[in-house]
Amino acid sequence: MDLPEFRTTGEGYSPDKYYVRSVDENHEKTSMSIQKIDLPPWLSVLVHKLVGDDRWPDYRSTADVVRDGLGQIVQRRLMEAGDAEYMRMATRWGRWLEQDRLLNEARIDPAIVARWEAEIPAVEDPEQRAFLVLAARADAEQLPKYWRDKLIRICDLHG
Image (cartoon, rainbow, N blue to C red; front, side):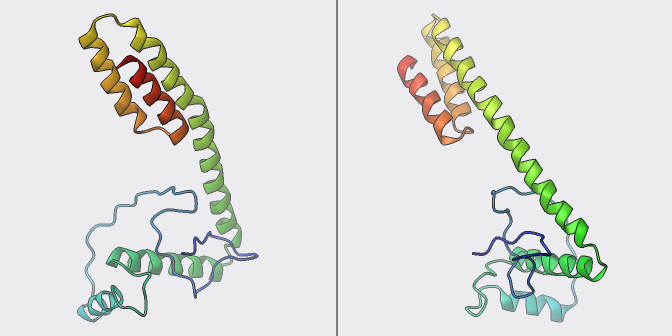
């Protein structure tokens, strides 16, 4: 499935693309609360017609149709208004956020593992140690694979 960016040069926006993904190419997302909206009955029927129709396999839910429609109209309107620079800036901003997230992971994940590596063996009471191992395993589930595996090995060693 295509993972489009907000770009106006090279391989960028195309009205022929489906903009249905809830995440970007880095699996990042931002939640936007959209209250229930009223639609004219004819539009509601058409939206539901698209969902599940073999001719449009990208539309698996009404949310996919809404994301695609919103993605199409926002990009089209910004291009009509000559806001290509804003669209390029939005793409750069998304990349900066991703780089910042990766840097934070690079700092935080090893610190989490190091903290458990020091804390678990320091506890002599078996019940308290078992509780710490359970807590560490819960933390491990939130970590990227490398750090998760390392923390699970520590838990296995002391659990």
